[in-house]
Amino acid sequence: MRQDCKFFESRTYANGETVRKCDLDLAPEAPWRCPSECSAYQRRMADVNWSHGTLVTPPTPDEPEGLGEDDSIARLLDEAEDIVNEAAPAVMADLDTRRGVAGGGWRRFLPFGRKRGS
Image (tube, rainbow, N blue to C red; front, side, top):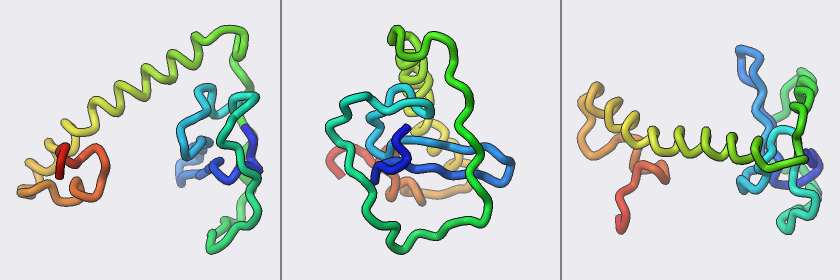
C-alpha cells in the first residue's frame, strides 16, 4: 500500500497484530495494495499532532498467490467486511442490554449505532 498517502493508516496492537488500511476504504486488496490509479491518493505532507510509537511497524505480510490477477481476493475481503458490518448493530444492542444501558450508550456516537433520520 502507499504508506505516503494521507489516507493510509497503520496501527499495531499489544498482541502484535498490525492493521494496515485505507481510511476511505478504497483499497479492496488491503493490506497489500492500493488501486493503481486511486483518485483519492494525496501525498501526506505532515504528521501534525500524531503520536508515534518507539517500535518499527512490522513488515507487510507476503501477498497471497493470485493477488491482482483476479478480483476473488477483493471479493472475499469485501464479504468478510460485510459480515462484520451486519453483525455490529446486533452485538452493540446485546452489549447495551447486558450493561442495562437505555438509549444506546456509546452507540449514539458510532455511525452503525444510529437510527436513520436521527
